[in-house]
Image (cartoon, rainbow, N blue to C red; front, side, top):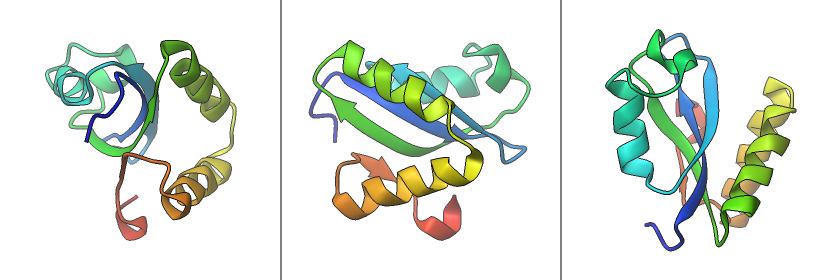
Length: 99
């Protein structure tokens, strides 16, 4: 699953909000969020569930994807994920009815 070491990821929080971030270890980062040691935003919205991840060859590319994504509206974020699913660019995507 982890072909490169840099990921842009999105987790779904308990309140159905989404949190986007960067990591070089997906499994460890999701666990950190769920242990309450991740971002302040997710600390009070646990548990979180990974719904999307995209792999990049550099940290810069992954962080640029995160920056771009965070500027989108919720609807456009949903479209972004759907487009990546259809193009097979994502390394992990939840089923559309589970987003």
